[in-house]
Length: 91
Image (spheres, rainbow, N blue to C red):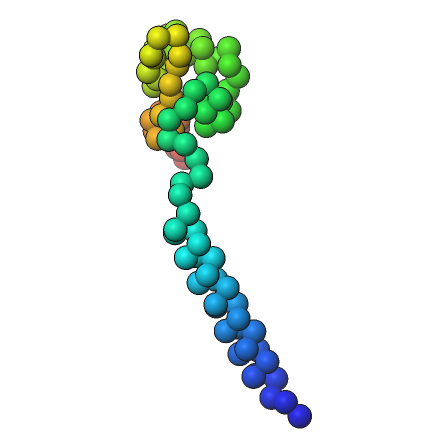
């Protein structure tokens, strides 16, 4: 009869190899999300509607840049802006 621990050890070794392969693949892959984008990026990051984002841009309340008639948003700046608005939890 086979030792059941040998089967478990073989499966663990297989899982370890698959995990290392997945980590190597993730580390070598380019970043999935664009760092700079248009209004769609701002909507994705903030989960706000286009009119709301345009209102915030008009009030200069949201980080953005403008080139001609096109608005540009930086993902890291938007995330930092969202983090600034986080309220402290008081007890």
